[in-house]
Length: 384
Image (cartoon, rainbow, N blue to C red; front, side):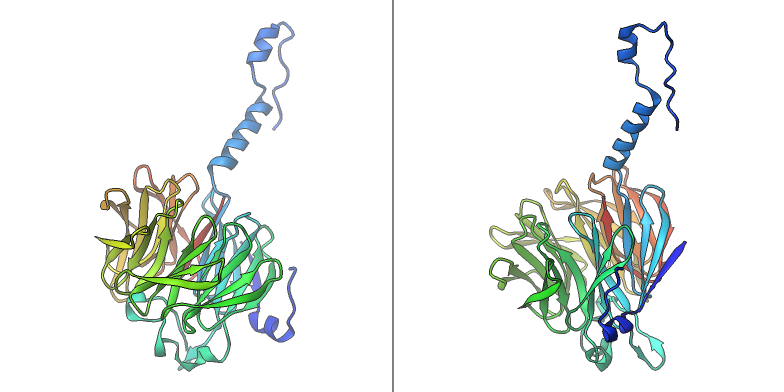
């Protein structure tokens, strides 16, 4: 297993950017022309199977490890391909829409009393106030951009204090980073890799998703009871939707009609009709963290984290049409990040307090494998 060591501090000081079977073609001479047309060579079969495999299965998935790394896992084998070491707390990762780049948010490595600080016990309000002390004010967080094939660091952009989630717009024009302690979101232009806008949000902006048309971002404000709707054409907060206590992360259906938000301290999933802003709530597990809507807009998968002292270990499956729980799937302790494959047949969940990823067959709602990754895996993203 290869390891790539990256030093954010040295990058900051220097300003440097790292560029980072053979075919059974011996057909019988006596075969008829019709038989030859109906018979595929083994090479043709191989090519067909390879094409189907590439279409059906993801290539890699990536975990943001708070212990200071990004784990890259081969989705076909569920084996770790590489661990990319990063100086600081890696909070979130996302693959770009074209599959060529990986973005990540990093909180600088700080310590108090000689012990490094881990984050994301959402129910303990770890994102606010004194959870990280004044040390986080000494150095802004970073947005990192990696070449997804070579794992090389391409660019580093300084963002705000305590960056949380990282999301690319679907059109590839921008990358957005929520700055939890600054109550705003940094908008990074992907042509220049520079911050072109800083948009104010509610208190404690954290997890978010962007609409399929790249026009709006829906940002969960953890330190209040709202979701900020940011218009990405005007680059202003359009409105706030009251959803409930401690919203951690959001999800948005591809038609832009339904919004979901995990309510960590209520143990609920808020489902919002965006035409009326009407909110309905569905009870899920203890301490829900991230939520992901499948590609068919049928289910919302909620990872129930709990706390480190009282961890949850499940994913709740919510049918968005009936607004009812259809299944609860056992995972590892501290289920946090969640994502599905593009065909919605596989679900991947990070388990923060066991340093693993649970792989789930969504047709059976059954765990098929558990993979060891880096320390305290947080966010997760998939490369198709």
